[in-house]
Image (tube, rainbow, N blue to C red; front, side, top):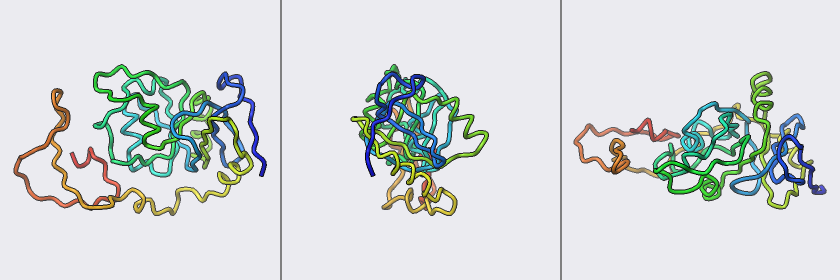
Length: 221
């Protein structure tokens, strides 16, 4: 199949050729600006209205197989760090934003969110009309879709449409095998303290065994 460069919607970004695409199973295309890792991923498109906790959301195992649309406009203002995560490996397939990632302004930030996305191999798009997309999800349900990022702005659109249309969706998928822990580990994390963050606890407590099929760190805490 031939590859092509699409012209961006003037209401969804200023670049002539979009570097990010969201292609839904019904053929609807949202043009935007790619962020994070390059490539493409298929998943169920959902939305989240939280104003904080984007790093926790992206690493939450319950979002496995989903592309998350953030409705809050200032994603990135807290930056990224090693503490605000619910699992070692992010579960979400990608993220969709209206505005460009906000520069970090938190004293806890250790990196910019865009750098964290690249390091965690998460594909993202900005410049999307998230209100339109959220209304679509609210009224018609969560569609299957493909999120794609190409620095050159070149996409195999027919192939992306076919992948979105042919994906079976989340119903019936055994996601536990994808988010389960690959090995045993000891949980010794103490409560968060301003000066030290999450330290190690030496407290004596009953011995508890957790079978990790995608448990969040906050559940362990």
